[in-house]
Amino acid sequence: MTRIKKVILSESEMPDKWYNIHADMPNKTLPPLHPGTKEPIGPADLAPLFPMAIIEQEVTRERFVEIPDEVMDIYKIWRPTPLVRAYNFEKILDAPVKVYYKNESISPAGSHKPNTAVPQAYYNYKEGVKRMTTETGAGQWGSALAFATKFFDIDLQVFMVNISFRQKPYRQFLMNTWGATVVPSPSKLTEAGKRILKENPDSPGSLGIAISEAIEMAVKDEGTKYSLGSVLNHVLMHQTIIGEETIKQFEKFDDYPDVVIGCFGGGSNFAGISFPFLRGNLKNNNKTRIVAVEPESCPKLTRGEFKYDFGDTAGMTPLLPMYTLGHGFIPPEIHAGGLRYHGAGPIISQLLKDDLIEATAVNQNECFEAGVAFARTEGTVPAPETTHAIAQVIREAKRAKAEGIEKTIVFNLSGHGLVDLASYDKYLRGELQDYAVSEEEINQHSSEGMKIPISA
Ligand SMILES: *Cc1c(COP(=O)(O)O)cnc(C)c1O
Image (cartoon, rainbow, N blue to C red; front, side):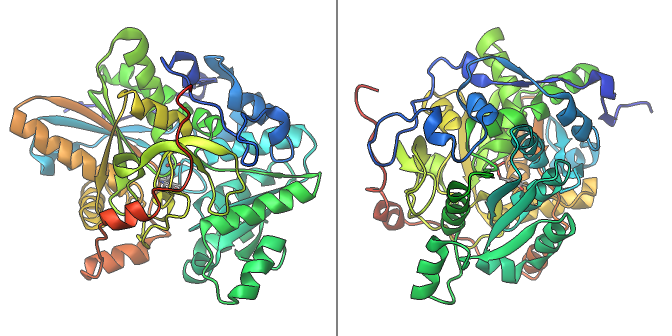
């Protein structure tokens, strides 16, 4: 039997441009606002944090942006990534569906995150930056940036949420191996950290606190810049290399997806796999459904409100127009740490508001059940985050069977779970808890942020 299992592009077939969906959005995003004046911010406001090239990419309306040769050269260590037809997984679905996955877990850091870490490190290097700071929760973003900064002789200071630092040491070891300096946050390196430690020497920390520390250190030192791994426009754009490759690979499979699925934290891997297909909807009238999958315990897309809110807990970042649960909302400790963020990126939020994408929420036991089923048929143990996308594939398959309609489905395998096996162990022992967020909890934070002005 000759059937194609996977398509790998050659290096020369690799797309050499990122796609900026801003060019094709019917309604553009609203501008970020200064936290003090509430006026739209300009490039100068961001200059202490990011190099100029990144700021330009944040606001550009160019449809395509050239990938620099130096970045391509590093991408090629693991890119192009395979698009794989999941024949074995399809069998257990017993539904009229073809399922494909784009395997982003094969990067050195084990996830899609290096796709933006590498260009971010490169643009900083080009502008003479010698040190970068960032925050990390479970360590996926910190390790991706640790890997990337090494190529450009940039020192990296990572503020890792204290509780993860203690409970999940392996990505800390990975960051150290790539030469980054990792401290638990809150730390004594910043005023923000010292303030919190004074109140509570055993503070477990939070992503919000870690962001405040990383920003403070970058603002105080001219040669130091800050880096964010999701949410912002330039990050989403860097990730579109995923979907651009996938389109070319589908041509070789002689197929095209009816449904594109990505798990959702701040929106970067979802944007990466889906925006090039959304272009097909917007420009060629294709009817591909684009589905973002979030945890039920952190439901900003399905139960949040579209308004201006801060990107961090302390309220130091610009106000961004987004679907948010409120910047003070602290999600329960689910294992998909990368999905525990209170807001969605501004572009994603606008697309959802305009009904150009869909969103759905799943609880973690359904996710791990899907993850185990996938591991037992296709081999790869998916990251807890990624299992959300797989759970949705199963839901789509059931729907296709009930409706008797054939469907081609693709999902982004955003990362592997080899550093997260403790969570699988918990699931297999039946000790994993589902968390539903009550209306009260959602209402508690509903006054945070700022309504979208009517003139906007
Ligand atoms: C960080 C992470 C996510 C979530 O972040 P997005 O920006 O929403 O993509 C998803 N999957 C993996 C494997 C991650 O590391």
